[in-house]
Length: 264
Image 1 (cartoon, rainbow, N blue to C red):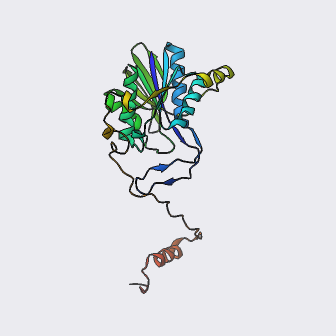
Image 2: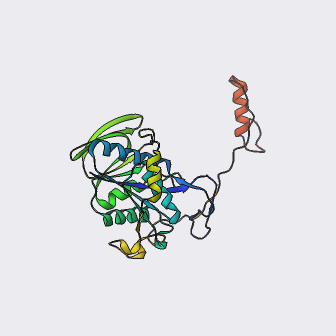
Image 3: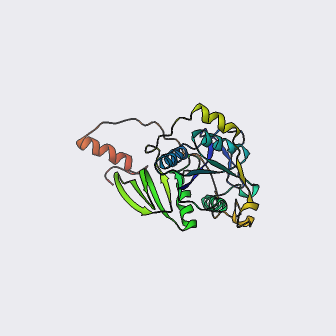
């Protein structure tokens, strides 16, 4: 069983600014952490390996400092880590990001299962996993809270509209997991020490089967952020308690246009 896990480094705070020309989040100077949902995806992979055996390969896309994500993954028990980093990948939207991940994963070899977190805390689109499945032509599972791999099939519990559906589909597939279904384990001291020295595999544009820079980053993105603004804060309003005819007259007064006489 060969499992690929997609993880991402995200800003550790909600504050930030956008580039006015590209609409891309300016990450310089922001504290960076591993996306919480992706840590659950790695935990899911570790549980599958405990059941079936195999290898866990973690892929993360970002600048050099994103290597920290792979060090954390190593400390939790991942076998191999890949940093997908190239200036050509910068500013990618969901379409370009998922295409880059697909190309990077294929450059490493064949996999039986790809796991992603439900969403990232910076973009919150919850679409990258589905887009990745579309590029690969694989089946996909969303909102997974638990699953079991049996030979060439996967049986999963998926949360849907307040209910849980149990489905079985053949491998290979892409699965997006929920946080509450897979609580990340604490890394052992031994693995933490090993993670510091373990090599990280680098993947650049030149390593991909499709090296055309027009398909990646801003150039390969189908969407652009036109404007970013904070929503207007709500004003504190007075609570009024009235009933019957008194309440009706009060509401009518609020609805009546300025200058309009009563009864008109």
